Image (cartoon, rainbow, N blue to C red; front, side, top):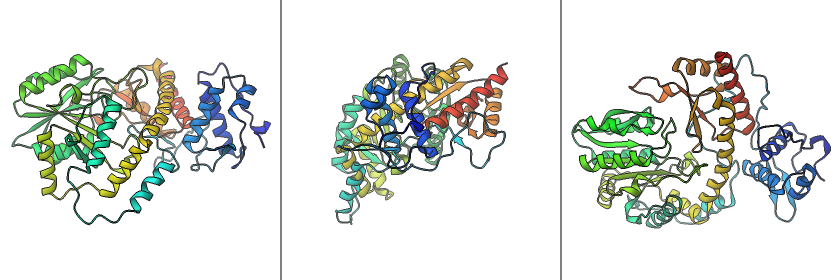
Length: 461
């Protein structure tokens, strides 16, 4: 049985949305409403493309998106079918609500929350079956991590970031913030100060103070950390934490000139640079710039994680550092009884070997690219957008009072959008909305952008 006319796809050639997005949004809405029942066989991509008078690849991209989200399932040799809905979702309307449940916003535009498949993949199931077939580990593991996993990560970093890293220079962690804490604890000296971006990542600043470091807040601009502000920093600055590939949360890309300036500062002052490369896998305009760790492996602790690719709940990451520092961190880790989980490491090794990381990145990259463009189309006329073409969020720079007003009014319509003040410590509120689009559905993002644009239009009139 093919798709009945009651749920036939109608394309609007004047719509600014790309054709694959229109097709996917229409089919998703029909599945949600029940027009397309569970088990319904959809037309082949060739047949639907012919009916809609579009290229076959347009339909294939729409189907791939819905399969990745769990709305459809492809059965080899049989066709594409409507799957059970991933979760009950309230279909948004084009008219914002006048009131909303403040305890549970309808749409949350949280930065840093990634898309993950709603259903377990075959690779995921294989990984955990493999772990379950092995006997329980009775001895403490290597505090630096399983060597096979470190070797696999060495290959991943070479492929994904162009970094040449020996497995001995990699240490397994439970995430980027955990890795930062381990390194800071091993490097701590009396009166040590860590320079940090402001606004910046609050978990990183909390980890630093928990490890006994004081903080020096350094301002950022459209190009990331203002490195020249470090020239007058005190001699107690022993480290600099930076997110050069996509400054969190303003989205700035640290240009090569500033990267070299930062490296020169680190070498002249014997300072360690902590590079959090949290979402460098996701660029949609140009290839990512070389990592600081690639430019200055002797001065950089590179922090990585699977949180933005395979899911934050896995709690696995890695750090790359000079060999003597890795050994020092491993000794510190053993002394405090902090060891990486053997089963988790085995599962991640299986996922890397199975190509799951690469598949997850490819699927998420397509999804995020579409959302990045949707944010640009909806909000570019209202102010400067920073961070376009990368990551899982875009920041709209606004007057601080206007940003607070829009955030408050959007919440009244069920849309929770963070402001930059939530990531600012000492340099005052720069003013802006942080539009996180990693986890939201296309229709929900469209609704949220309509609400935000409506609020901005009212205050711009």
